[in-house]
Length: 180
Image (cartoon, rainbow, N blue to C red; front, side, top):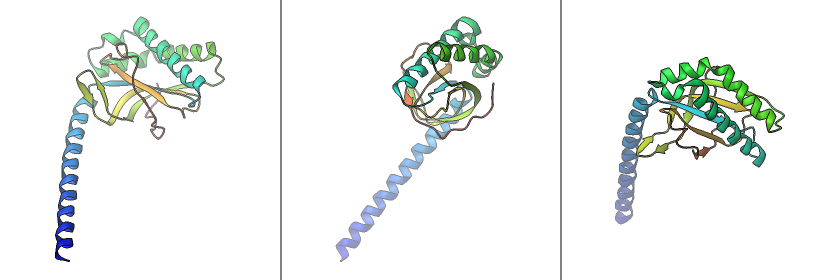
């Protein structure tokens, strides 16, 4: 009986230690995320659904918007995230027209919306830099019902241009913060 009690205390102590270590790591990630969040602007495209057609359309919209951003907005030359957001907001109508043209060209029977706000994102690594999970400002494009897997990257610093193979995630629960 005494042995079981000793094993129980040992396991309890290990669990408490593990939880403390996880809590310390979580706190560290939250501090890093808080420092980074104000310095970046994400770009996020949510597909209408998970069908192959809608997923391909999501990528076509991504490519069209990045091309528009490169050729028309100058956001890649922004000096900080707030400047990039300001530039992209000023070009909101052009971005939305680009999205709608792409949807029409691809035969989609739904519309799109643009939003700028704070949204939740999972951890992502670009080169040597890790962007912890957390809330970041983003330019978000919602295609149709926006219920499918999505694509995201960083608009500032302009890593979208360098990394067109960004992560695919599913975070349907995020809410739009404001519209462009």
